[in-house]
Length: 147
Length: 328
Image (cartoon, rainbow over all chains, first blue to last red; front, side, top):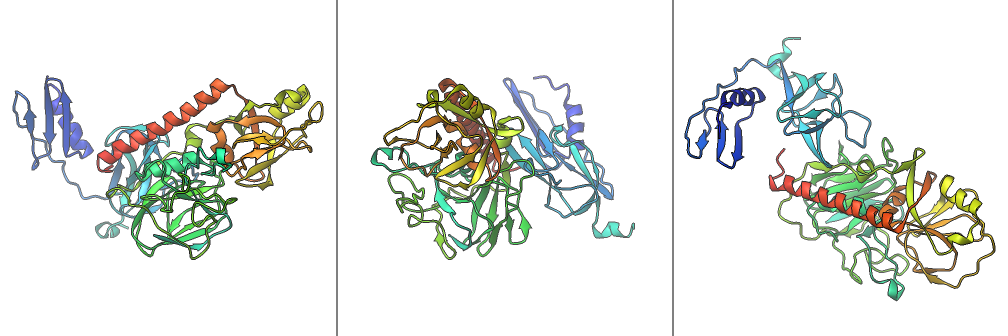
């Protein structure tokens, strides 16, 4: 198995905030992990891949990312009202969008409180793992003195 | 265990029906929207023959007497658990003491009229002649052979181990729409007395819109449209009929036999709504319009296979999701 693209893959994983990545093929298995977790390549080769931790910025705004590949829905297919319209106040854990995989619908939940500032993709858009779909401005205590 | 707090008439326990009992003159019963019931059971990892509560008059309110997973499928009736709005066609967790409220069906995208409250483990009532469906005419099956009343308590069967909640399904009405001229359509096989109707009456049957009158229920849907009059009066002895049969009484206004149809009748039969489309009609609200589309036997069988394949695809997808521990 060629490992030509590990650096690129690592960069993507870091960007997407993915902690673990595993790829299996007939000749081996590639497993990448973020620093502090298990990493290494199983198979005949053994290597250590270090992923740079994403630089941590104070979060004034944050995005909600797709948890898997699928079709992004801003509203339930049976309903006409959006789950998280622009400008709406969202609390942590609230379902802000759905991911449609065949007939299966999975919730996409907000990781923290916030106000929806941008819908980055259209209803019905095809998204991949980690795709940024909604931007929110944080409404936690540290950020309130901004206003 | 749940307790019924308030219910309109005719909320009943239903499963997929009491098949194979027509030979004793016992009707089939079962969910008017069998696909919605089946999807609820898939969401909860229930057995295929698990029973649920079919609700057709709203509002409807229950209290959960123990922690349980549940799903509400069928019509989207703005379900609320205490004060929290719930997504339709979704599997949720309720805590003991919480109240589930179902309101009037909203018809944003799909005009449907019946909701299914499915419980993890299925509604536990004793099977009679192989089914838990309520047989209202015979007053057996379901809960004491009758519709539910406030104060009734209904137990759930043993649920499989902690099944994940917090995900849903896209309804088959959206996945497999069937519309003609903007109206819900039903595929129909010409039946035994079809040829007794002159070409003009047959054209009326296929080309015109049929309104579902208020005299429509689980026994049969009385339709209203241009009267269908045979070339010559038809006299028939009483004979066996099944859900889906479209009878035409002397007035010419057709009646479609539904799940609680009696097993025999004597009116001429112009057609039969195919088994695969009965759920579509079962959800059509009173006052709404439907169209009939002519189908062949092969098309009817193929349509049932499409339904079955769609459902097994859904079961496989949900199984994969569950195998991953329900993680997102």
